[in-house]
Image (tube, rainbow, N blue to C red):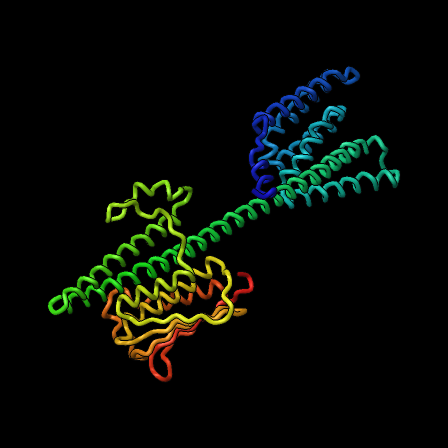
Length: 418
């Protein structure tokens, strides 16, 4: 997991140790108690002033409780209570804590209008007191509220700084959250693409295995039906080929299923997966490659299609995926010749160089081959599968009728990284 996501997860786990309402109640009671105590301790004032100051300071502390929800109202009430203290002639020292807390709360929890209003009020009060003092109209004693006003401004500025830190932290957490969501969406998209690619790969393999072998089986069975009356031996040979082709199809299907199993060793199930003949079935076969093209040609010859295989250039070791692609291209091309070309012969040519060239040609009906496509179920997807296989290996594929008759499948696959 990325560090940003870890940081986000850790930040989301942070919880206040004390609920906000309980903390506000404790602060309000504490400020009220401290303010009332300080007022009652000022013995140099009259008793009526002490009682009035204690009541005002206690109210000033209690009014702080809703400071988070109503910061502007709390600040205004505290300012009015300060004015009441001044009017009563009481000391303002006990009001400092309440003024600091209310000013700080106004900065942290208040809006922009409250900030502008507080700044404007500060300027007006300072000018209203400073100008008369400077002109000698009033004494410095009248300017006593200046200290508490400056203290309120200081607390407000501290609150603004802390609010800025909170905002930056919230913005950072939002960025981390967006990154985490983006990473999760990207992972889901990659998983979806991987799933689609895997499904396409399985579909290609199933088509190439099933379509090829079943096409051979159908053609051999048709031949056996036509000859069973006049040539039982030939019909028996055709049915033997049907059995062998069916067994080969089952073996390749088991091999494909073995490759698809995750976390299982297919050979552990070899004894459980017995073939129809009674022996243990092959658990997990290696995918076919160049070495199997000769056996493929022999199978097609047994089905009645004359096939020759020629190799040019200097053969070399190639990757398994390249070998499988070459085999499937040849298999699909020869299967199409068998199904659609009518009486024909085919030639497979493999040319090695910087690129491997695969060419499968026949002398059958050529452009008219598509007319018989409905004769055997399942026809029509082989060419798309060949194009997908070649494109994955950055190769090229051309398919079409030959000018002189017949059909040609030609593919080139780079071998530099083989």
